[in-house]
Length: 201
Image 1: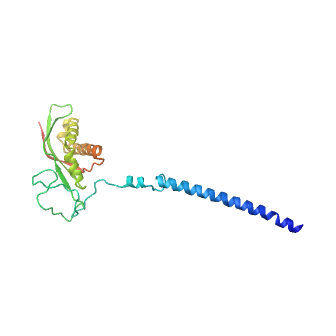
Image 2: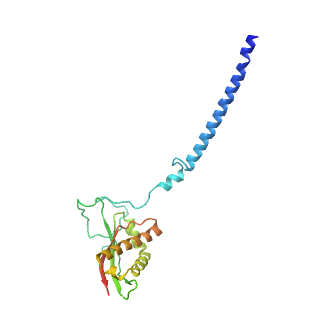
C-alpha cells in the first residue's frame, strides 16, 4: 500500500509541471512575438525599416572652413548669387564654419507702416550651411521677395532711422526668408540679413 501511495502522486506532479512549463512557453512566445512586432513597426525601440528612413537627417549641413561643399553653386563669372571671385582663402580665426553669401538681384521698395515715407533697400543674406540653401534662395526668390515686401510694409518709420530698429528689421527679414524656405523646402538655413543700401524718402 505504501508503494502505491508514493507512485500515484508522481504522475499528477509531472502533469502539473508540464502544464506550467507549457503555459510559461506560450506566454514567453506571445510576449516575444508581440515585442518583436512592436519593435519592427517602430512603436518601441527605434526599429522598423520605415522608421530608420524617417530619422535620416537630410537637411543642409554646416560646412567647415576648407571643407568641400558638394552642393556649391556653379560660378557663372558674374557678381551675385553665391559666387566668389576666384579661389576662396579662409582665415584661421573666427568661426570654424565658412560663410556663403547670397545677393538679391534687385532693390526692394516699399511704403512704411502708417507713413507716407518709402524705403528702398538692397539686401544680401548669409548661410553657414551647404550650397543647397543658396540654390533654394535663387529658386524661391519670387516668394521671398513677396515676404520681404510684407515685412517692410509692416515696419514703423522710426525703425528705419535707428540702428536698433534696423537690427530688429534684419531679424524679422531673416525670419521671413527662413519661413519661405521652410515652407517650400523643409529647412531655412539663412543666418543673417545684410543691408547693402538703405534709403528712406
